[in-house]
Length: 165
Length: 149
Image (cartoon, rainbow over all chains, first blue to last red; front, side, top):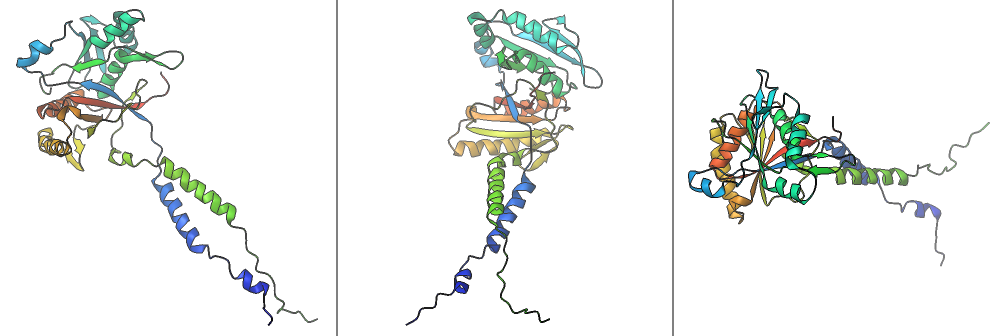
């Protein structure tokens, strides 16, 4: 018996790829449409329990906090930065230099101070949030030439402005 | 001259393999980069920049994400709260949900995503509302600024 083994039959045995390619392109279009490049986000940690008269005497820090007053002009921009009663103008660099001096030279003593000492921000109601973040950035640390973070004060709180906390 | 049109010609098909390879690579690329956690971020919020911001080392056990618009209204759980006092009920429900999952109040972190031009007084009011329902751990979210300047 003769078995026919024609080439024409072998060519027809290919898989039909059309439907798979359709689905793949649909997936591709979905991911391209939903893809969005966004900047990385980071956090500043703030621990602020509600102050009550009962535990004030217990949780009161041993040292007085560093008091930073941020005053706003009518536009909401920074008008004056006052650190422990001393005006620093509108320069957050001056504020950063001042608190770096308060933290002392790098070493174990600075590590202890910045871990224990609190910084209290007293902000005007109308001050823009970005100005406060600039202030928190100034006291929290700075990046050195190698882009590494030199940590400064980490205990940050906000003074009750009478309308909120 | 007679042209023979009946001569069998092989079907000319392009080789699709490199295109399919490339397409799968593109799909893999977008699948890896897609971030569904961005869904809860509001587009209306333009965060302030900070050179010190860095993503948290560890994720909180339970988080409450509050978006504050420039006007001071708060976006939370798909609703906009213009009166911040109305937020207390929604926060209390969220706390009950956390407690059902055996998460203590102290382990709940409130992430505040406030617009850079929002009033600080409004942000402090929001913090005060959270304190009223005994939440005390806050994260102020900012954009990572790669260059100081």
